[in-house]
Structures are given as structure tokens and as C-alpha cells.
Image (cartoon, rainbow, N blue to C red; front, side, top):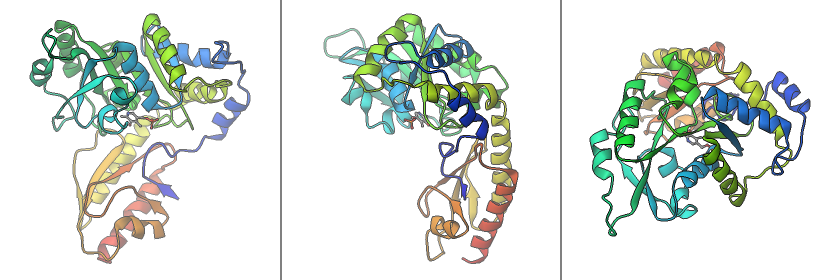
Length: 338
Ligand SMILES: *Cc1c(COP(=O)(O)O)cnc(C)c1O
């Protein structure tokens, strides 16, 4: 199977399984799983923060982060298309009692900073207290650049806002920009990263920030059901991924660019955006009897999306250059058969 649905679908490599099998374990809720502590320290160091916290999912790591910054009735500013707003069931509001103030994302994935400034509420009993600015990088595969991040950080400081980055794919952004991850993370007080996306582990995310923020976050993680016991098994996969799977994200980016270039010349396929990291967005013309996903499934290629709407194709650890060629051939066949 060539699974292009997401970079979440990777299977652990033999070396990763070996690291998991050999992990020294304790009880992470009691605070003494050495492998979890090592992962949390490693992620914190890589991102230039004091402390880290392992969570089962990116959704939970973001929610813990938002709850660690905001109290009941506070507000956070977030992109209309952001994962924490759109794709996490509104957990900040539902479980954290934190009101979102969404702002339309610009086409490059950023938030217009004038609109952010205008959304910050005055200190008045009519309004929620605006506490936090939350950004995402990469945003739908797009890299939010360092100049913008510096401006966003200044604006947040000017308005007394704290800052959180949903960095599920932060390492894709860092590799794409050719900088250390901490150069991006420096612009935020807290950052969540996913280990289970391009980094290729089966499970896990890490939230990093100050020791004080992570101490608050540890309480939130417990009430959200994220306290895991012998979690060193998954932390070992995370350590392995941070050691071995960061630089190779460049291969995923090269494969995505190659895939986009090959699909762009196929009749009936439109590549929508310039590829910056590991995601290719395309539109396919109608005219075939069945949805393209069904056609591709018969060629052992998995796609996520609906006929006539943008399809997202994601490259990852388990996608080779040969898979790109096979996918191109299948699209050509689909194009001819329309
Ligand atoms: C996947 C993702 C998350 C959430 O991660 P889960 O582990 O699926 O809960 C958060 N933000 C972004 C941008 C993501 O892509």
C-alpha cells in the first residue's frame, strides 16, 4: 500500500521497535519513568525551553498548553483554519472554559497582525480577557517565516499576550527553513510538537515551556486523562525519532515537490499551491464514474478527500521515490480513463 492520507500512518521501523523494547520503564504519573524524563528533557533542550511534558496526542498537548496559559473565561486568539480551533472539537472552550477569538487566516497561513491587534479586548467587564495568541507552523504544509514570527511576538508582548505554537509539524518548518527548531520555538512561550506525524512514532506529542508552565500543565494532563504509566515505551520511540528522523524530513519535502511536479503535467489534475514541505494539494476534474479515491484504492494507493474538492497528498517516512513514480503512473492511468 502507498498511503498518502497523512504523515500519521507510518509504522515503527525495526530500529524504533528495538529502542521501545529496550526502554527502561518506571511510572510516569509518579514521575519516575526515566525514558519519559529523558524524552521531555531532550525535547525541551531542542526547543530551547526549561521543561517538557509527554502527552498522548497533539490535541491534548495543545489543550494542556492553552489551559496552562488561560483561566476560565479568558480568551485566546487563533486562526479560523487552525487545528486547535477547527479540528479539536473546540476543546479549549468545551473542556478548558477558554473562549476562542478566531481570525481568518491569510493565504500564506499567517494571521494579519493588525487584525490580531484589533481583536485584543480592552479591560472592560463586557469583554473576555484576551490572554493568548496561538499560531501554527507549518500551517497546512506552509511555513510561517521567521520575520513574521518576530513581528507576532512583538505584537503579543506589546499587548501583554502570552504565546503558544501548535508545532505539530514544527520540524518540517525548521528543516524547510534550514534552521534549528529552537529558532522557531524562541518566538513562543510554549510549543507542542507531534512525534507521531513526520517524525514517525506510533504515539505521542510533547509540550514544552517554562518549568512553571509545565508544572501547571502536568495537573491539566492528569485531569484530561493523559497520565500514562510505563509511557517510556512510547518515549523511547520519540527519542529515537528526534535522533534519527529530523534531518530526513528533507527527503519527504523533496518527494512532495517531485510528486507535485509530476502531477502538475497530468491532464485533469491541478496542483494548487507551491509545495513548501511534505504536503501536496490538488484538485481533480470531474468526469470519472467513481471518486478518485476508489480508483486509486484499486491501485493500492490510499488518498484522503472527496471527489472535486482539494485532495491532500502527504509524504512521509514510508513513502519512497519509487512510490512517487507508482503514484504518478496511477494518476496518468486515471487521467486516460476519464
Ligand atoms: C495532527 C495535528 C494536531 C493534533 O494531533 P493529534 O495527535 O492527531 O491529536 C494538532 N495540530 C496540527 C497542526 C496537527 O496537524
